[in-house]
Length: 560
Ligand code: TNX
Image (cartoon, rainbow, N blue to C red; front, side, top):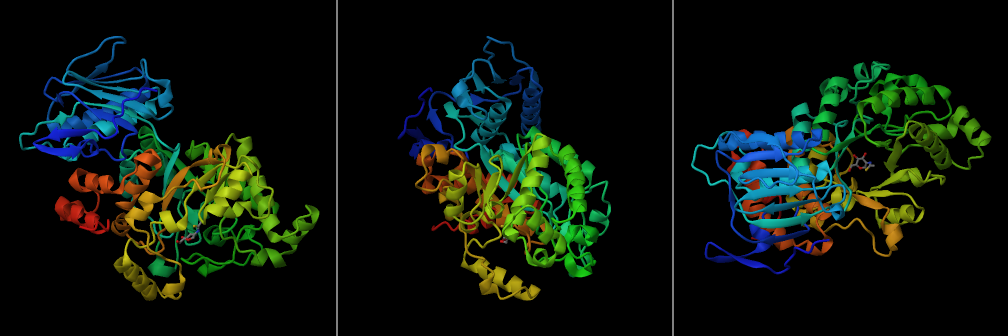
């Protein structure tokens, strides 16, 4: 591994001495970098060269489109000729890349003559271009051609960068409330800008089924609508989903669908009551807050339904991992259901928890037979017998991560107290949440468990619990934040809860732990990054970027 880092490098910029990390205003902070030499300045003759792979040309295309739009320069693209060094060019190439960069790492070298992004894989090239955008002035993120004379300058720099974790995720709950397709794309876009690589899409839950399934049209004609909130509803068509999945893939993001089972399934069983224990249609079942109606593991038709549904899901989502939920499953109906009790006897299952385990095992086997892997919330561990290839999605505390890692299961960490973005970011927003709960009449606010998760807490979150051996710790694949939307009815409200906390999660899961530095991070946010986010259309663009920067700052809890 090439050692490019000079740890305490201080450079002189415009007469004032700035730590290098603030000149390299890149989020997440690269693993290693060195500022040196003259800057590269884009001009009307600058070209963009790339390798022949389809991913390379798509990545180059995305960068070229943006650069052309804001600079007004032609930015001609072309194929890179192996072994040459083109001047006045940005080159993206896999040639001669350091294999230690792995699946997602890249090297970026910028001098007055050229910029080279070198990576063993296409994901690395893509991440190199995201870093490059952040090395340019923030105005590079505008939606229109710059009308003022700009110096499109990239500082002389050498960067060697790869992520701490292979799994860096964000979950969006589209069941409780549904977002616009535009919002989903923009969120994916911003995730990619921060080098996040897994979009976990919570598409089904009690209050609404949001994914078109051709074989079961009632899932969306019945299950996507609720009497509550004035007949609220909607869903994503298969065409929309295909195009969102492709959009994400271009940006190196895998979309992991979550199809909740056996609990959180009121919308499904309201649509097809024959797959629940007590097939009485429950019109009020589809509502925020859910119910005790779940899939019946005692019926063959339940598994037929699940397999048929998942078959369409697998066709839409190429992800190797499929999330089946598994959390908070009520066992009330199972306890009195003769069919469930008969399965328990036949399979010698001592408890209803063991029945859920058996159910999960059957679904895991189905997914495995199709070359996919099951992921589920940590309740899938209850009842024992979780297959070793299942990924445990841990949302409680470190104990669950430790237990899963020691059992040999891979773990994705999403501890509620650190990474649940439906929680408040400060005392005032917590009061706002409590007021909303009162308006909705959903229980006593103080007992709902909503807490405060400030930006700094997200930044300091470490998904690897202390005390694991290196072999056990290797099972911690990474970290993920979630936005549950029981109280987030609009896209604008969702944005408020996601940003800027997702930026902190991105840096915490990409940058080396020893490089994390709250002060440096907040300086980068304030000096350029918030402006970039505003220019990229975060929040309501019509309110103007100053207002967006102001509200991002407010939600950050900076002391000054
Ligand atoms: C728990 S986390 C849930 C969600 C809720 C969330 C609210 C998890 C696996 N289940 O269904 O939306 O709390 O914070």
